[in-house]
Length: 295
Image (cartoon, rainbow, N blue to C red; front, side):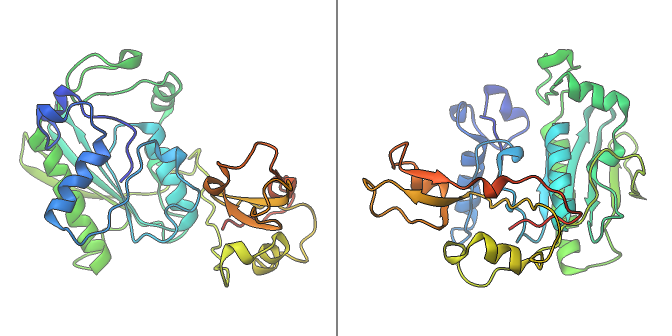
């Protein structure tokens, strides 16, 4: 669960929460409810934006569920799922039209649609101005119009998204990949339409090649990573980015236990003196090849 925000008093309109939870992180409150329903479920929470997640956060997931009116978060989640080939299911509401909609991006290949494919110049202008929308019906940043969504409309969009997730993972019924399902509360009509890639989409539709490293990362060297990716004979410079890890080139004698010549999680280095370790700049060379590999 990923969300940077906290519950507010008006969150009772669209969230299963009480006024006493105002000020609590949304992910913490949601995780507590999930844990109460299913005590055996392992839940990981991250209070922050999707942009701050490690590069490989979605690499092993079955699918990503997205429920936000934040265009920047939608683009970022779509970009990550595109690169890693992970399905993305996006639930949204249009309060003024009483519409609940769910878009399912299969990302089976680089030719499919992504959330940014549906954005136009007006959307990017709102993004440039950092306009924020609110479901609470109040005035928000950037002069965005108030959008008072009911809890029933939000929960309907969530239910539709979960139904699409179950169908996608279990392969039930007609394929839901690269489609949008919409329910209109004014007419009680439901429609299903295809999602197609926009040839002018501003997102990078490159599909990354995923390589599994044998053995723990702590026992690997930069050369070993290059060899595992099959790039040992590549011409030009390579970009090697290892999420949440740093290559420790050498350590100060005052920190004898600090590992050297290996990758170490950055969190494990926080207690070391500032001059204890020097990180090799080889991790951050500029790319001069047409291939890109992430671990």
